[in-house]
Length: 271
Length: 338
Image 1 (spheres, each protein chain N blue to C red):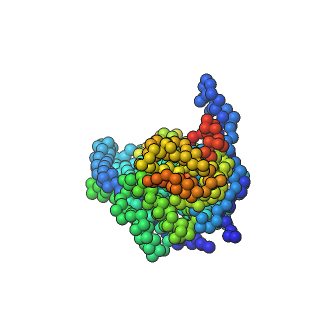
Image 2: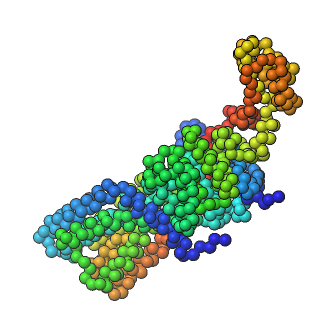
């Protein structure tokens, strides 16, 4: 009888991870446009924010250099982990290929997450190009200390796990309604706004701040970037990481629940 | 007596659909009404399949074939009844069941659309944790058998239907599952492509002792591949058994065609057969195989007339199936879709 070990599980998902980045590389022109687009975006961001800040040292307590760097870094992260097509799941549900996915010896959730990680790796060159542009123009500075850098890496990993879980959760809407385009647009805009990818959350009006802090989105991009800029130390830093980890766990649990309902819908009602 | 590898007993699947009554605001009302209509897609069927068999699973559109296959693969949970596949209940441990079955659904592909065919095979190699040596050998054999060489590095989205189907077959058989489900694998293919697919199916069944369940509307597939068939309609079994027996049961008459050039064929007659059509060069005679053996009719005709050519027509499975479907179901009551 076949016995699963951690090793066989990882090998099992290796193929899908590769499928993720190979699918990105399959469309080279798309990737190239992504790189060019982000270089232009990063350049414009640096120029425009500097103009906006001309004559002001601080807005809402945030200095010019931090605001510029934040905008560039957020754009880089967004281009890597929040692509327009973040999951092939809805398409596979609509085409009926989901049945085949369910006949695989690995769970559907792990298959999808492995592929999402692959897609992210495939898009890393885009983010790297943006980051290099930002550094070259003097718009982005490295974290103040090695500790900040390490904490940022941990925080970013948790942020990405958060993003991928929510992406998959939203994609699973396809099990209930095949018209998922509207849901995706709403989600895309909502998460970009609430995660701090569009505008740093420092600039949000006072009444919105507590709402945002109770939502999972601020743990996606705002939290890791705050750590990058060294605004969190000691207990506050650990607290931020704990909240991020908590969100990942809660979201993953939610994903399992939703997936179980989805399976029930497919296997009992026939899709 | 071998133990069956697939056992199906009293299998039933009901679907619930919102009951939409025609009339004004039917669409709007359906949003609020809780009235439901039950349809029985599969209605208490039982059959079993022995290891190494190649069984045709036939029925008109909407007969319940795909629903049954989905329950055998574990994608659907039955409303009642039992299914055992290789000693397991397919939907209870879907991941374990995965290693014992392979499947090809002709209407949809399991390959990765954006990637070269070879990448899909590598993903499957990893998913089923095949060791690299076995993978290489088997892919080599299949590549030769199905001539994959010319398109294995082409993205799946650029493949022709026949090439894609060959790719799908290899994807289903790479990890050598003991059971293979084929749901309309030859649909829409040209004669040559169909031939290749049949050759491959025959080889995995005979050479590799794979149990194959074949769903198809192509009676050539059945005649060339299957010894036994299960025929269902309206969720119930119409026939289960030997293809030859089915023909014998339904073919109550057979035809002989004679050609002649030296005399008028319209004058031909025989005490053993009835002339059903004749022109000066050709006559068709019908006899009942139950009471009269074919050689007897042939001998009678050849001894009395100067015949240039003679052929006994094989009973046509397609006619048999058509007869079977129409006898049991008024055409108007049949619903379409699969």
